[in-house]
Amino acid sequence: MKAHLLIAGLALPITSFAFSDITIRDQVYDSTTYLEAVEVFKGYDDGSFGRDKTINRAEALKTILTAAELEMPESTTNRFSDVPDGIWFAPYVNYSASEGIVKGDDTTGLFSPGRNVNKAEYLKMLMLSFDVDPSQYPVITDVKINDVEDGIWYAPYFKFAVKFKILNVDGENNINPGEELSRGQAAEILFSMIRQGKGLKPQVLLNLSELHLLKAVEFMDMESVATAQILVDVASMFSTYTLEMLPENNIVQSADRVIEAMKLLTTTFSMRAEGNYDAAIQTAKDAWAKADESLQLNPQNKLLTDKIKEIAAGIADKARAEQS
Image (tube, rainbow, N blue to C red):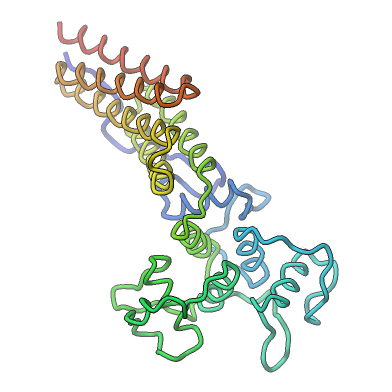
């Protein structure tokens, strides 16, 4: 008799652990979740992120400087008449002006903090804040973008961004430099910049991976495997970012073994549901072994590895019972 599991059909919708308007399937999920975890982006009072809302120059500058971990001086000289003393963004704007990251409008001399930021302005602020000088990278000269003319002031920033996969051109090789950015787009660009520069924080990534795995275990207990699989995939994504930076680290390798074990577990549910009992039993054993490898590499991972072993043993027992 085949098992009746919640494998087929749509997975249950899971919203972000950080924001109410972003689900784990959204393109901006990894960037917004990570940037919230490191306190770069905050949501609105209703718990939403506001991914499609435009981001203004003041907001963009604050998030960039926070991500770059630049310390603001306690007091700054007021540089612009439209940036009053005491307003929340004044330290960021004044500091950036003193460092040459931003300047006022050539005609009015104003900073225009409430004006929506476009992609070209954002990239310039981003790279100057992260101390990136595109002219020091001769490899970018071969990058050609249809709507970015060579010689225009923002060309080096876009060439660098495309070369190092911070931004992608569209299907017609355009990048829309004057496009006003949404909060979601800004988060994606900022996250890509940090990732390509190997500046992501490994412990934060490991914590996010574990958070999603624990939630996946809850759904496995309910035998809602489709939802568990999505959560495992998200956990795997955060784990992969960590592996890119610390491939030889035992704790990171331990986390990777847990991911492998969880992927095997989701496979065992499918095998059992299809009546492939011998395969389900063997794959459950493989998942148990991967969990044990993880535990040997990092004994502090015992809570999660014990749970994986428990689920694996339970699946194998049920497969044996159904097989008979």
